[in-house]
Amino acid sequence: MSWKYESGLDDTYSIEEHIKELFKVLEPLEETLVALRDKYELCIQCVGYFPASGHGINLNYETISKAASLGLSFDYDFYYVDDHGHDLDYQ
Image (cartoon, rainbow, N blue to C red; front, side):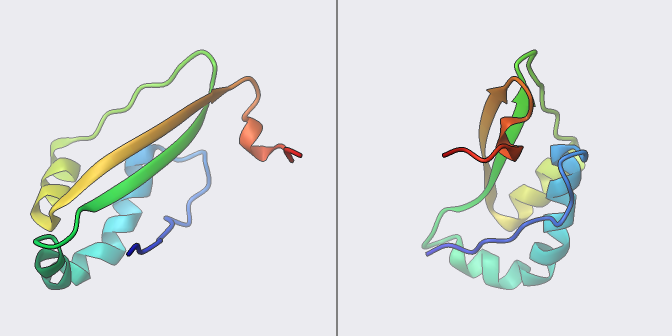
Protein backbone atom coordinates (compact mmCIF):
# COMPACT_ATOMS: atom_id res chain seq x y z
CA MET A 1 0.00 0.00 0.00
CA SER A 2 1.23 3.48 -0.66
CA TRP A 3 -0.06 7.01 -0.91
CA LYS A 4 1.67 9.40 -3.22
CA TYR A 5 1.59 13.10 -2.53
CA GLU A 6 3.84 15.73 -3.99
CA SER A 7 4.49 19.12 -2.46
CA GLY A 8 3.66 21.04 -5.61
CA LEU A 9 6.81 23.13 -5.20
CA ASP A 10 9.52 23.27 -7.82
CA ASP A 11 13.11 22.19 -7.21
CA THR A 12 14.29 25.65 -6.19
CA TYR A 13 12.77 25.11 -2.72
CA SER A 14 14.61 23.33 0.08
CA ILE A 15 13.65 19.80 1.06
CA GLU A 16 12.36 21.16 4.36
CA GLU A 17 9.97 23.49 2.50
CA HIS A 18 8.67 20.52 0.49
CA ILE A 19 8.11 18.59 3.72
CA LYS A 20 6.24 21.53 5.28
CA GLU A 21 3.88 21.53 2.29
CA LEU A 22 3.29 17.79 2.73
CA PHE A 23 2.47 18.33 6.41
CA LYS A 24 -0.39 20.61 5.32
CA VAL A 25 -2.00 17.52 3.77
CA LEU A 26 -0.92 15.01 6.42
CA GLU A 27 -1.66 16.86 9.66
CA PRO A 28 -5.45 16.83 9.16
CA LEU A 29 -5.13 13.04 8.73
CA GLU A 30 -3.39 12.58 12.08
CA GLU A 31 -6.01 10.18 13.54
CA THR A 32 -5.89 8.02 10.44
CA LEU A 33 -2.09 8.01 10.40
CA VAL A 34 -1.88 7.09 14.09
CA ALA A 35 -4.23 4.14 13.45
CA LEU A 36 -2.20 3.02 10.43
CA ARG A 37 1.25 3.27 12.01
CA ASP A 38 0.60 0.16 14.14
CA LYS A 39 0.26 -1.93 10.97
CA TYR A 40 2.39 -0.08 8.43
CA GLU A 41 5.63 1.83 8.18
CA LEU A 42 4.79 5.45 7.46
CA CYS A 43 7.54 7.20 5.56
CA ILE A 44 8.15 10.39 3.65
CA GLN A 45 10.30 9.51 0.66
CA CYS A 46 12.50 12.40 -0.47
CA VAL A 47 14.29 12.27 -3.81
CA GLY A 48 16.76 14.95 -4.80
CA TYR A 49 18.99 15.64 -7.78
CA PHE A 50 21.96 17.82 -6.95
CA PRO A 51 25.11 19.12 -8.59
CA ALA A 52 28.14 16.90 -8.18
CA SER A 53 29.62 19.41 -5.72
CA GLY A 54 27.38 17.90 -3.06
CA HIS A 55 24.47 18.86 -0.92
CA GLY A 56 23.60 18.80 2.75
CA ILE A 57 20.31 18.54 4.56
CA ASN A 58 19.03 20.06 7.75
CA LEU A 59 15.66 19.40 9.36
CA ASN A 60 14.78 21.65 12.27
CA TYR A 61 13.25 20.53 15.56
CA GLU A 62 9.72 21.53 14.49
CA THR A 63 9.86 19.35 11.38
CA ILE A 64 11.26 16.36 13.28
CA SER A 65 8.64 16.80 16.04
CA LYS A 66 5.74 16.95 13.56
CA ALA A 67 6.99 13.85 11.77
CA ALA A 68 7.38 11.98 15.06
CA SER A 69 3.90 12.94 16.26
CA LEU A 70 2.47 11.54 13.01
CA GLY A 71 4.62 8.42 13.26
CA LEU A 72 6.54 9.25 10.08
CA SER A 73 10.08 8.34 9.18
CA PHE A 74 12.14 9.79 6.34
CA ASP A 75 13.95 8.07 3.50
CA TYR A 76 16.29 10.13 1.34
CA ASP A 77 17.49 9.17 -2.12
CA PHE A 78 19.98 11.74 -3.40
CA TYR A 79 21.46 11.66 -6.87
CA TYR A 80 24.39 13.76 -7.92
CA VAL A 81 24.44 14.90 -11.53
CA ASP A 82 26.47 17.38 -13.55
CA ASP A 83 23.63 19.57 -14.77
CA HIS A 84 20.43 18.57 -12.98
CA GLY A 85 20.13 15.58 -15.30
CA HIS A 86 16.64 14.82 -14.03
CA ASP A 87 15.44 17.45 -16.50
CA LEU A 88 17.02 15.55 -19.37
CA ASP A 89 15.14 13.06 -21.49
CA TYR A 90 17.00 9.80 -20.91
CA GLN A 91 16.47 7.20 -23.61
